[in-house]
Every structure is written in C-alpha cells, then in structure tokens.
Picture (cartoon, rainbow, N blue to C red):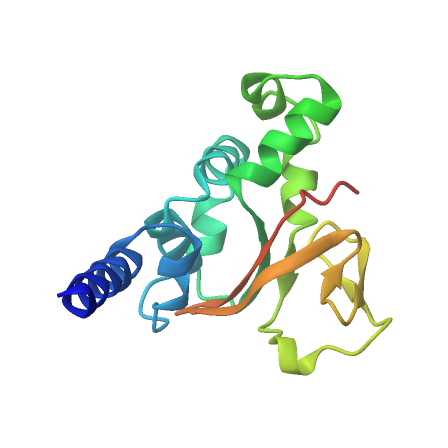
Length: 164
C-alpha cells in the first residue's frame, strides 16, 4: 500500500512538472515559433514583453533574423527595479529603454557550443558583452537555460538584466 502511494505521488509530481509554465516550458519548444512568441508562451517574461512592446522592438524580433537573445526573467527585472528603486512603469518610460533591450540581442544564432571563455560579442546596441564559462555568464548575468531554439534564432535565459 505504501509503495502505491509513493508511486502515485511521484507520477502526480512528474505530471505537474510537465504541465507547468515558465522556464521549463521553454525547454520543450522545438523552434516552431519566433523568439517573441516562444518567450511569451513561457510566461516568465511579462516585463520583457512589455518593454519590447514599449520600445517598438516586437516586430524586429519577430522578423527573419536570426537573432540571439539573452532574455532576463521577470525575477531578474524585479531585482533591477529594486536595485534602481523604480517601478516597472518608470522603467518602461526610460529614454534608454530601447538601448537597454538591444544590449540583450546579438545578430546571428549563437549557441552555447559556439561560446569561448573571454569572448566578446557585439550586441545590436553597438556595445560588446563578455562571455565567461563555468558557469556560463554574459557580463554578470548567469545563463540559467541556454539554447532555447526559436524559428528565427535562439534564446538564452539569464538571471540578471544587462545594463550597458
């Protein structure tokens, strides 16, 4: 009887994980959707989605690309808002919002297997980010979920908003 309860609990737990939204949902994508739709479907990028909309970058990231996006989670944005002592609305109204977002985007599809320790990658903001390995980092942001494929590029989920 105890074994049946444990097995039942385990199966319920596995089913719940497979159905949960968020970063785990990104791992199941097969690259059929563009970068914007892939991130939106995950549910962990609401602030990023609002910022892309406000900055007029949605159509760009729905374009043919390919692009590599270092995508900060909502939790990463919440940390930034707290550090800057501002609200999400104040962030969305910053004059440099577009530059901040473009600092998270690289032209071309760069997979984690393409990375080398210390390499510099030019972003669409015209500024470089520095890659380090073990753990994989972009500047000071840790990549928590690499190589999420989309139809027009790849997303690397990061835990910190990159500020140029």
